[in-house]
Length: 90
Image 1 (cartoon, rainbow, N blue to C red):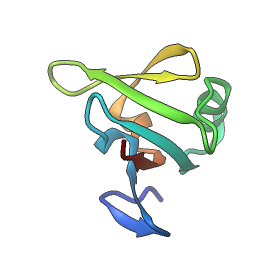
Image 2: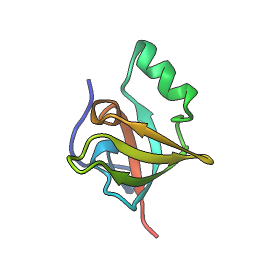
Image 3: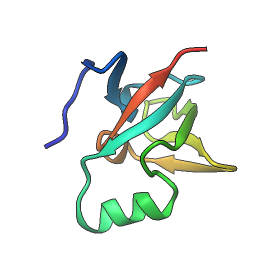
């Protein structure tokens, strides 16, 4: 079951990818997706410890454009809600 909202995990705050603001960076902590959606996200590079840059959001907030590795990927909010991340501070 996906966890929403911020919580403490170790020393860094964890949240879901859909809650990360545009222009921010995060590192994937874990997935809450299952089946074909989980495999698709893994194939796209959304693997634990991968760095994610949230580039921008559509005017109504869905979808979200992210940079993973050296390419850009657009995710629906429902998919981003399944990826738990640790926000990085610069």
